[in-house]
Length: 218
Image (cartoon, rainbow, N blue to C red; front, side):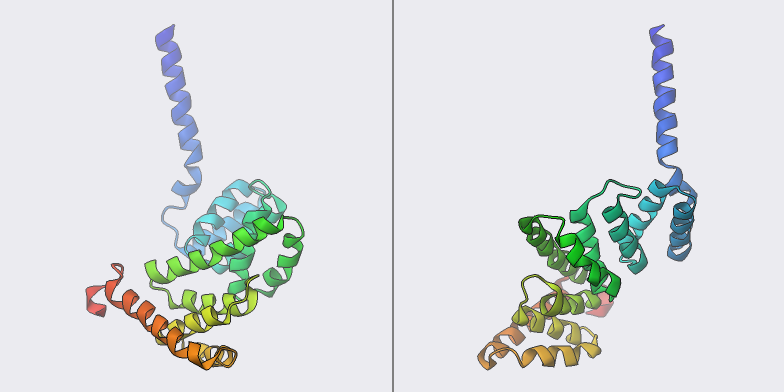
């Protein structure tokens, strides 16, 4: 009897694992565009948990549409538990991708959470973007940091904005020049040189000491 029970439990456990892996296995060979479409199809068919998994995975790769969808799914509690803090995080990231709907939604989320929590979540955004710049060598993240500190952060900081706009320009985002110069007019002259030195240190460290950069790029 004990042997039968053990076999039954093992069979049940394996079956549960197989079910849990269904979404990943059936999308194993899809590219990001096809994978995103599968998430949309899951959503339209009412398979919200599968849809959430797809969008979450793609959001980790910086997919703009997936980030937008996650901000809404966390806000409404679709495919996952309702979580205003996580919705705020993805709504801010979505806003930095230029989505005005997300930017307009921030106020309504702010009204639903405590001020301390609102500020706590805001401090995670620069960390995410800095990691993307360093670990993924992504200059767009540097530009987004500049915009974050200039326009979106609850704690506007023009010096940090100028710093990251400068880094983004030197990293190849030349459209950031006008943003950098605009913010530079709001900073005292004696601070500009100091910030420029900091920008050069960040750029140099990322270029020559980031292990994710290929040796051919040095």
